[in-house]
Amino acid sequence: MKKNELKVKINYWLEKFEITQNKKIKISELSKGNQQKIQLIASIIHNPELLILDEPLVDWILLMLNY
Image 1 (cartoon, one colour):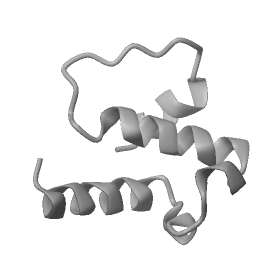
Image 2: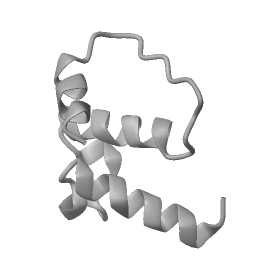
Image 3: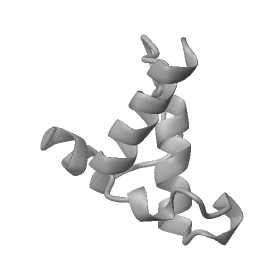
Image 4: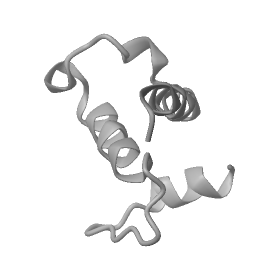
């Protein structure tokens, strides 16, 4: 993936998860919830064919159904 394309995708997902204001903050300084959002973005940014989640994410499922 080209660098510009990656930046566009990152910004897209940060906006979708409403965490654009945290763009310049170290991940370790974010709340646990925002850290989980970043982890999910990192997992889906390259459009995997299969994504296996190891714990129940009811809130994520509800959130994703709205997109």
